[in-house]
Length: 257
Image (cartoon, rainbow, N blue to C red; front, side):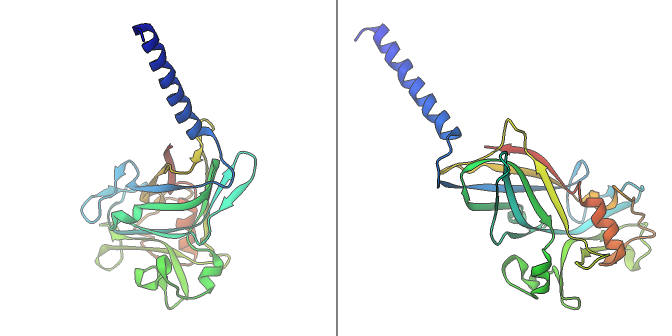
């Protein structure tokens, strides 16, 4: 075989390999399932979240540190461009800033498809709140359940601020409650770039990367002044905080297919 024929053969092999890779990435096979990962990168506005030592400034100009930051996401649903959707069963997850492993959530056995939207609850749905203490991510031992109130804390932030008027200058924001007018369950929804949907395929593991802004608790609909609001465990003040973070706690950073 001469050099010309060898070159043609090599180009043909490369073309077939490229076509095969491209097909694997785009073709949706019926009844096929795949996995994907959710990654949550905790921040405070534009700064990385560093527990206990890093000083932050809220929208009111108050200084503060954070010692605890935890939050639930649940009832994850993926939607396709054609309007169909897939709700992940038993999807309850607790992200704890003190446990880096909790910021990566591996989700399995998802029907193959191109998904253009994701939504989930910030917190725990009403039915599970009324079911009492449970296991797994909903285990009361994880410190996110009010035994005195028979309900879950959806978002917990604790810390200190020199502007706080609480004993020892503490900050205590335990956001929860399922009964109107103090219902703090919020739904987060975001669309993906149409040119880069979440592509679920067999033998692939795409990743959705979210930035999570702890600072959003104190800004948005209403600025939080730590001299006036530094403690809440449900009730009307928790609604103020939940309304603040409802649309800005999570920001989609990118999808890696």
